[in-house]
Every structure is written in structure tokens, then in C-alpha cells.
Length: 156
Ligand SMILES: CC(C)(COP(=O)(O)OP(=O)(O)OC[C@H]1O[C@@H](n2cnc3c(N)ncnc32)[C@H](O)[C@@H]1OP(=O)(O)O)[C@@H](O)C(=O)NCCC(=O)NCCS
Image (cartoon, rainbow, N blue to C red; front, side, top):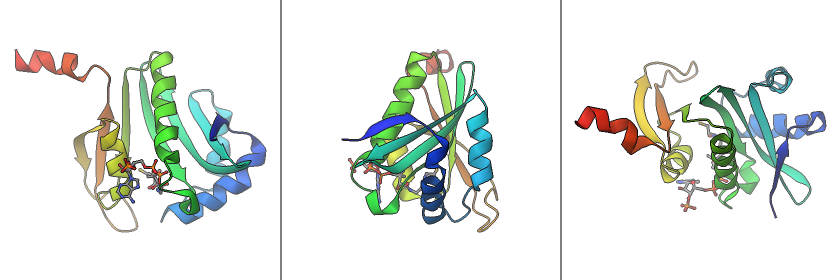
């Protein structure tokens, strides 16, 4: 059974190892520790079989959140853990009154884009030449539980 709980400093080594395997431009240990210091950052880890298998970091300011990082250990991907972690974030955000969530992703990251679309994130914008290593643009996805209500004024 997967268990999701707040980050503890003893998780750091496992997280940094996963991060290096999961991303072409990985965050440093210092970046994770900086996020862990601030209350506006939500930093959770997914535990399976007593091991850290994934994590997410989001920044929440009042009713708005940005998902800055989410990853599952490549050796444990495609088992439903990423979806569980993201659903946990969405449920927690709803309980805390967050109304809108934003994130950025590379167009080449098919797995992440499929996950976001499965959970009803919608592509709303692009940021050209965002990623320093490839020059790829960033796709900006948005999630809200009130999408139809939000869109009504444009339709009327
Ligand atoms: C994106 C990521 C978190 C998904 O985690 P995961 O545990 O492998 O995903 P899950 O097994 O929970 O899959 C949930 C859904 O995601 C999508 N998905 C996951 N892997 C996919 C793949 N390789 N190709 C296409 N869709 C994929 C599917 O929609 C899937 O639903 P389905 O099983 O009903 O088809 C994982 O691939 C990862 O850590 N990638 C590296 C880090 C990263 O890119 N993070 C996002 C940065 S924006």
C-alpha cells in the first residue's frame, strides 16, 4: 500500500537520487531543503514498501497553487503511484480552499502530459524557449474544479 506523508529530512538522499534519474535538469538537495523550510510549500513523499518512491512540491498562496515538481522513481513508474500522488495533492488543495492550480511541463514529456490530462488539467498557454537545455517551450496547464462556471461569462 502506498502511504503519502509530509517530507522528513531523512528522505532527502532518496529524493535527490530519484530526481537525478527522473529529470534532465534535476533540482539540487539545497532546492528541496529550501522548499521544506517554508509553510507555503507543500512537500510530500510517497512511501511504498518502506521506501520513498516519489514526491511532489507545490507552492500555495491563498486560493492559488503551482505544482513545481512531481516525480516517481523510474523503477516504480507505471504502477499508479504518480496518479495517487497527484490525486492526493488535488484533494488536499480542495480541502484547503485552493481554487486554481498551475504547472509547467515540456511538450516532449508525454507521460506527465497524459497524467495531467487524465486528471482534467487543461492546456492554457505556452512559454517559448523556457527550458535551458533544449530550448523547448513550456506548456502551462491549469486545473480548477469550477471550469464550467469560470467559462460561463465568456460564453454569455
Ligand atoms: C509523470 C510521472 C510522475 C507519472 O507517474 P507514474 O507513476 O508513472 O504514472 P501512473 O502509473 O500513476 O499513471 C497515471 C497516468 O499517467 C499517464 N502515464 C503515465 N506514464 C505514461 C507513459 N509512459 N505514457 C503515456 N501516459 C502515461 C497515463 O494517463 C496513466 O493513466 P493510465 O494508467 O490509466 O493509462 C512519472 O512518469 C515521472 O516521474 N516522470 C519523470 C518526472 C516528470 O516528468 N515529472 C513531471 C514534470 S512536469
